[in-house]
Image (cartoon, rainbow, N blue to C red; front, side):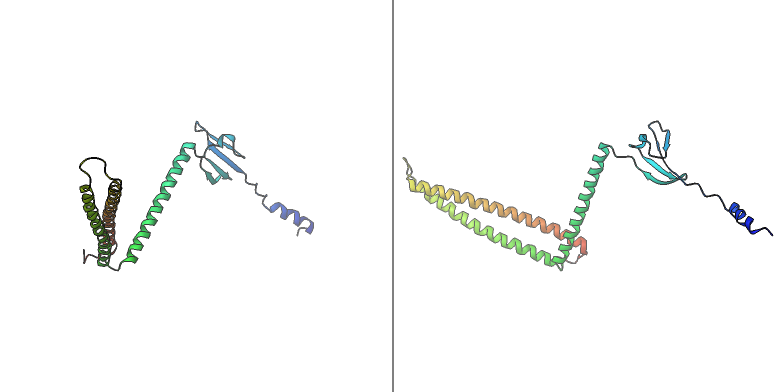
Length: 203
């Protein structure tokens, strides 16, 4: 049996030596494709893609910084992507509003007819006023003297009537454009409603 004083040193000799500390290495390829490495990031790697190794194993890959042209292209792509997502979200919102607004395509048609009917009533009233103004203008024209200066009051009345006639015709044209817009909007809504619901019974 070994003396106790010799056991401890022998046990210590039997233990494995401490593992060497692993060091980090940074590597990249230069313009000629040659690999450059260092225990700190080599200066040549600052504007290039590089890898970080630990004990010979890649633990991190870093992409090269973007050039100004690449940044412009990336920003344009990001904006385009955001715009596309916004349009898709808005389209989904409009679809939901359409579905929430009408229980059937027949209800949508009734709403269209009601809006157009109200507008056509306004157009008829405006045309009646236009007709009155045209009649009044003809009557005033007959009051002009055959020669000489037109009396001041008559001239003012003719001017006022002409201005009102122009204004009412602009109103009529505006309401006609509005009617066209209503028809186009309801046509588009009707088509989309049928696509969403398959409500073909009343197409």
